[in-house]
Image 1: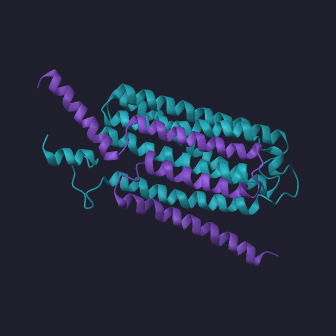
Image 2: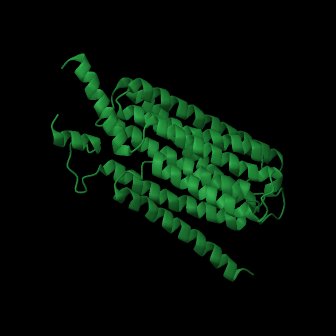
Length: 110
Length: 203
């Protein structure tokens, strides 16, 4: 195999890997910039009065950031659905634990 | 390499046939992360229930340094970018790039942990000990557990750098980097939740 063919082959492999996970390095950097901007917006709620929107804005930003990292950085969006099931089953149970614990304390609070 | 072998290498099965057709290591890692959701779900629930229970000592609003924690959060968030770049480099069989991005990720993680130690020290000096109040106990337990996870991640990253330099990783090197990357990103997403629920939303 010539050096040129070898380089071409490596390039193809690299391209396949990106296709497998659906993202290039430039794509990852774009995602990181979006996450940084969302974090800046979150922090701005500490300095700027958002009024009634304060809580919804923070919760929506938190959820969106969570799913962006899980979907793109952890590749769950592009990977086998079994991995999604393993993770989201745990996440669902965790949220249920939270809801049930809060409800229990609410109903049985002295 | 045959098409079958290439396919197996891409899915990280190390040439072994698995019943799911997927890497058992990767399935195990995702199951582990699912169980970790339960651990942190319990800790976050406990904190949310107890954060208003302050019989003595400072209240949450008096001890949190939001600007400082915001910078720490940003550093941890950016470590996820460097981690994913390390995974990408490993998939391209770029050992030099992989070790570089892994080292930067570990340094960013160490900066975060250093910030957490500073924060804990400052809070302790302001009168918030582990047993001062239910708020203090649940806060230190939640953020302490997270800090331990970051520290374990840093140890794994630096171990991986050492192993890559000695080229002794058995099987698919890219998959090993990816698995540790999954753990690291998980630690990051947990902090995304903690930062909002614990620090930004007042008790």
